[in-house]
Length: 197
Image (cartoon, rainbow, N blue to C red; front, top):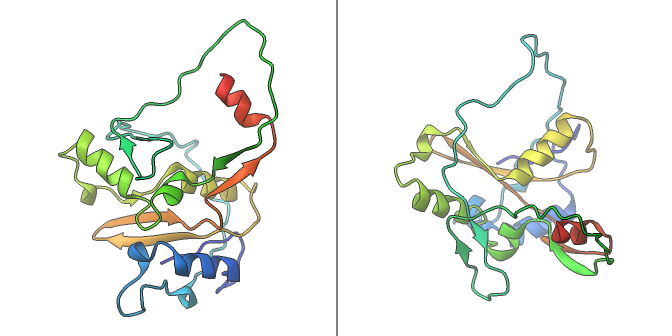
């Protein structure tokens, strides 16, 4: 179990994170011995340092798609479509008039729709799309939100606290973020721009 925060002292878990995470996602990190609650007292502060990359920039190698999914909006039972597909860019010469958004948008849709097992859609989509894939050959399983959060800290852009829980499953380390909120109301123009494109 890890709780990461940029330049955080040990045991830097806010009361809001403690309450939220004690109530949610107990199946991933909880156990019968501790009543299903996360061992918050074992939180670890991590100081991030600049790494010396003497051999130059890093680049991904051997990248392949092993699964994808999309959530089905507007249904009460959490439902995914496998395989999923990304939104398609709609390039048009027509003028776009944006209206201000006043809708709720997801911060962590997996956590919102499937609180007990937020990584389950990922595992199920890989099971269907690549049935021979062996997760024990992987080192880390996470979603893009965790990667973006860690990269923003590593690049010095993020200074606020956050929490990413990790659980070891054999040789595999699974990361799940424990957000304070799953979705929020947006009153800007950004999401409307995305919808128009």
